[in-house]
Length: 262
Image 1 (cartoon, rainbow, N blue to C red):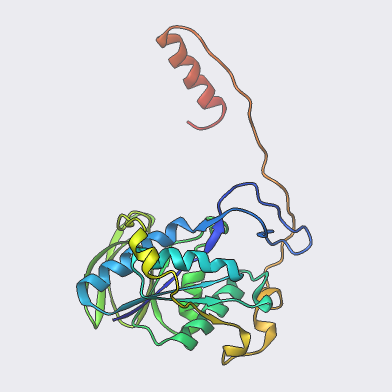
Image 2 (image 1 turned 180 degrees about the vertical axis):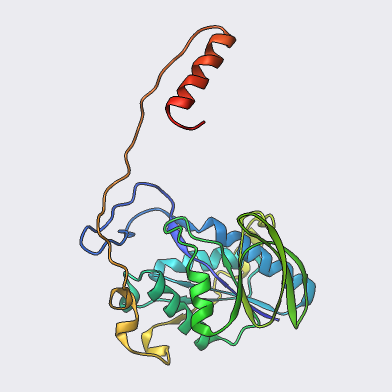
């Protein structure tokens, strides 16, 4: 089975500036890490490979330094990696990002199964996976909390809906997005790091895609308009209460009601 996992490098700190003109994050020079949700997607792919065989590839879109998260996946046991990197991809919203990733899939594929993390910690939209699938004309299921059965023809999964948990069987090829906790991600291996330190990462730019219309990528292909940018409020106020357990219990209850938490 040919499996692709879409991953992303996200800021490793909350102290990130936003470009007030374009509305995009200023990522240059800030600490970065693998999107936490994507670790679960990688682990799910590796578990499936262990069960049915095949190959696992990862793909990410970003500047050249995004190769670091691909190499982290090599240390977990992933077979190959693809980096979509081009200045024309910069400033993409979820639609342009989904379109770019879909073009990368067409270039690198076909794949039997595409796995994405539920969402990213820098955007929290949870839209890229489903939008990719729609662009590719591929069946898809989101919020997968458990993989019950998989073979070369279909995958049986349990999905977490707002009020119910449902079991769905999807024919391959398809795309799924997975919840945190579907599996415990394995730790990177130093032995694998040494073995893959010179492993080549395929790099694709706009020139490598079948669709070369620049209006479909980056800021040009992003219909989302940012109306207002502002830093989050920081509240460091503290109160120290002293008293008996009974008095403090009543006071905490009154405070929670005043804040409308209860």
